[in-house]
Length: 312
Ligand SMILES: Nc1nc2c(ncn2[C@@H]2O[C@H](COP(=O)(O)OP(=O)(O)OP(=O)(O)O)[C@@H](O)[C@H]2O)c(=O)[nH]1
Ligand SMILES: [Mg+2]
Image (cartoon, rainbow, N blue to C red; front, side):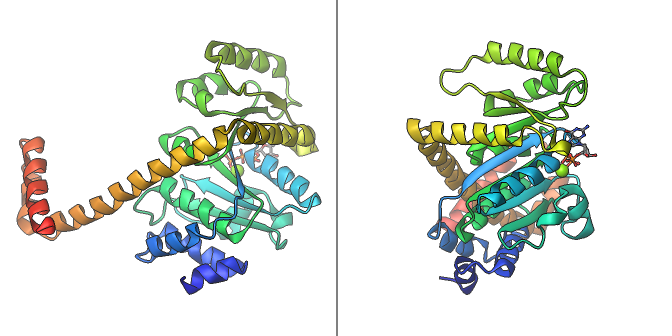
């Protein structure tokens, strides 16, 4: 096992931070590290919190962390910030709103940005979740902004996905269109101190009625994170979903499906790096790219050439 993996197993937070930087920068050591880490898996529970900018996700996560710490549970928070090329420092403090937890050894907070990561933000976030799991946290909470493909991808690895909505924001339609409704296990109406809560709840129920899934029916919880209201109820619903996943074996199925997907994704990524290197090392190929007429023909030709070279 790699020394870094060993240090993570011994709960060295600096090693944890370093490992996440490795996956974020798509370091050549990444696959070896992740492979060692996979064998250390400790069964943390993953929770994803998504919603529009400013919906109150970080404030909610902050309250949840406090709630968990009171029960002596440890937690890692990964804040995904697709808009920012930076991570760490003051920016993280401001966006994540968790100043009180930064010095608590039972809490680890990390922001993931687009910087580096060839495999994409979703890929490096999933790897970071795994690294936090191997460290031995009880819970890993992932905060993502917005409703893009990369958020949807990230939400596929978490066990419970909570979607945060606010009154009078027009969020519901957005979320419905983006396909988030299908993956939501829990809806949070935050800023329930504002007017329009009843209307939002009604709209949400209408959409949920259209969906009418067979198994788990996503509950709606109201919170006012600034006043620490509704947090216990929110946690209760998270645990209910967790129990549902365990009792029905749905959780196992979900994780297994995700692992299969990841094997394919990793193969695709590694193969592509290989093929890309092969293309970019060849100047005539680069010239060909400037005058493509038939992309199908070119792709087939290059793949054929690459296969002949590498498969012997
Ligand atoms: N009135 C009211 N304001 C709230 C509530 N929760 C959060 N806010 C305020 O909403 C603003 C955004 O809160 P954040 O927790 O940073 O929201 P976020 O969703 O993490 O924001 P981004 O990470 O920037 O997308 C802050 O000014 C909070 O004080 C609430 O329940 N009621
Ligand atoms: Mg935030």
